[in-house]
Length: 110
Length: 112
Image (cartoon, rainbow over all chains, first blue to last red; front, side):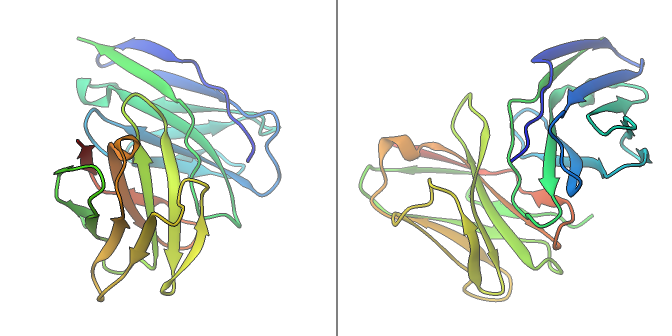
């Protein structure tokens, strides 16, 4: 499985935008970029995914670099409830399992 | 919004006993998964299940483990002869083909 690199932790202030980076320099043409998050004492939760174009949904936006070697998850207005571990995952279109890394622990400051 | 439900939320078992962890996936999903997370570690894939058979399993998923879909709604993980190192959170997930997976909130398994 292709690997991703994320910062171990980040901090952000409540009600401000948060940009969570992810590097995936060995991404292949059939890898989708998925983001999940895990709130304390809960199971992982799907956030967003994309292939080449930027994506928006009600939770977040995903900005994908033109060469696809990096991406950024954008939370437009962080709340305390967004404090979680965020996982950037490459998932081949032919593969149904998810391989989790260590993710980025996001702290939100009130 | 439909969700994956897991029972029990916490299971305490003596070492060497068998445990069955239960999951009710989202009703129109056809792909089912089990993952585990040992305290302080990464979430690890165990097994995927489709069309009433295992489609993929990890090295962790050895003969001690088995999965079953006994009826149209439940998906179970059985662990035989439990060991101390089986203590972990076990997450069930369901999904469609290559779409997002939806996870339950897990069963905390404690082996004494």
